[in-house]
Amino acid sequence: MRGEIKRNHYNVCIIGGGITGTALAYFLAKLGENSVAIFEKSYLSSGSTGRCAGGIRQQWSTRSNVRLAMRSVKLFERYKEDVGMDIEYYQGGYLILSYDEFEAQQFEQNVKMQREEGLEVEILSPRQVKERFPYVNTEGLVLATFCQTDGHANPHKAVIGYALAAQRMGVDIYTHTEVLGVDVQNGSVVGVETSRGYVKCNVVVNATGPWSREVGMMAGVDLPTESYRHQILVTEPLENFFPMMAISFSGNFYMRQTMHGQFIMGQGDKDEKPGINYNVTFKFEKELVEKMVKVFPFLKNLRVIRHWSGMYNMSPDAQPIIGQSKKVKGYYYAVGYSGHGFMVAPAVAEALAELILFGKTLHTDISYLDVERFSGRVIEREKNVV
Image (cartoon, rainbow, N blue to C red; front, side, top):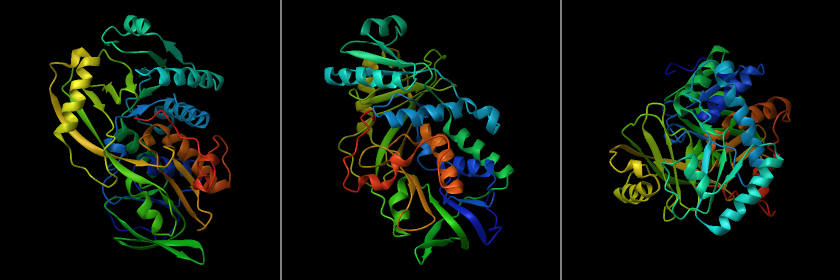
């Protein structure tokens, strides 16, 4: 992957070697387009994908996001068979806990809509939560929702699986190769300037996560995204007994147990300022640990073994920004996932590959996610975000 550039021209150049970039390359090649190159300035999954908790859920507050996530789950369910790698995908469910009366009412409306979309979701009382998950402290809990087909997977393995499958179909992947500029002439993409030389192309795809706005501006495309640090920690392992992802928007936390027994958990910080920042803080550890041992008392004597940070590339409505530029022909983007890129990337990549090759999507409508939605229209904000 570090070798010299093999060709001086590709039909499609993808900037970014995370889950979106590698999945897109895979779906393009699967549809017959193998004149594709991925340029990643570091190693595969070195950005947001490799720093996330790996959750995969379909419980959203907007109907369109539910549809997108449901399609992604179908693709994750077939991943091992289709792509050829075990990514530790497990449908242990998502338990969403509400500690707020108004939010609980919203959850009931959400579930009604989710069921209309064909998603099997339960509403659980605190008593039902305690009966089913006795290791959860339900003090202060108003209600919970649970969807068994939600789950989690290993993000690194998912990226590598897509990358290897794409390579087998003829895609070239260049790691440690930074894109320094996008060449636009007469309103069309004609090439990219990389740290290893110039490459001609017909299509450029911005799949750069935290750097989406800067890479957009290389082509004169304004993508209204900002990146915010989110911290995460992992504990020493326990024997596996916690199958689901537990999450709370009002409680501001999420947690799951890995296949090897460790607990991964994190929370948002309302005081976080935008900008690329990979530092970690003791304040985060202290706040999160104090909160989590109250909700999950079994954590009390566990040791923290690692703590890191990653970027949420946020959009104004906390929904991804996906589509093609109206200003620059051949410039496409899949950015602004707002912390949920891993879980919806398969459906996004499939749809974007179809859009690039056929001019329309065949499986999932993504037209509502185009950047044009911010041009004076009333936007619907996704509420189910930590």
